[in-house]
Length: 395
Image: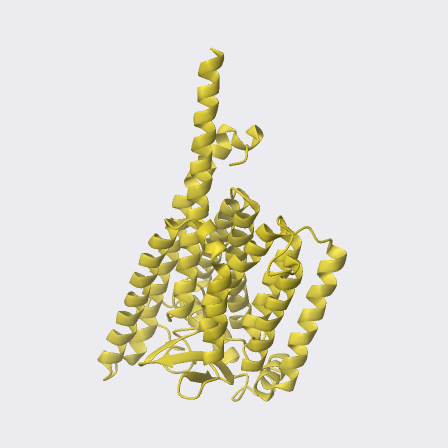
């Protein structure tokens, strides 16, 4: 265990560090509660003769949340170094799951993307879990760089090849959003590995151009981009969903129409329980509530970032920063889409949108972040005990 610099452990830093784990979990529970309330309100549109569907939506979401919280608890006690050491096997499993998306009868195509697996009536998105595996693997490459090689090759070369394979597979499947997030993970890896900006920025720019070029080739993606650029030309067609989203946000005003009183959720706004749940919240609870939710996400990212910044080692810094960035970027992209600032890509709103895959990803990520915090707190206690013993000897 390396010796920690004493200036990092002043009294103020100690208190903040000890409190950050509780704060992160509290923010997580708050966002989950917002999601439950919002989903219950939005699900009211199904009440007209379809009570079972309401119960089904809420029941399944409670199951996902329960499973996610259990996994969060379990991963908070698993040493993240063990996950990093086994990241190659985990990533190989993730790659295998992504390949299953192309298998007839198993893979499930939605909105032009082959990114879902359907088994026994259960649909899940492998790319969500592969984000965790890739974050762990890139941290493993940082650790292996100290040893010089990984599988008889440079760790940096292995990282580039692996990330490129995943991005290519995701682009072939039509999941350009996840491909872009994987690109950002690689850029983060380069930054934490000490690469200069004169190398990082061209890499990021080239990757964005490739993703955009592939998007323009695919008819479904090209039509979404054209609808975004010319949103006032096809209001009843490709731009319909975005316009209904803006109408919902505008109708809410400062304080909203009241919980359960949304008009847009009555089958006007598609995907109002998933990717477009935020406009319904804005319509029912108003601008003040939406700003509070944005504040919750900002507080979550800052708290998780603080935990990552004071990780015991560089591997923990990589994993923590990667998972924090993924959750933060998904929230940012979702808010950008529903407000018309970004083209529609289907990013769920973390912790709030209905669905299991992204929710499990988020809660497992929180569990890993809590373990990083736990490791940091343990190391701090060892440091204090050593300092106390040293003072006793000196006395």
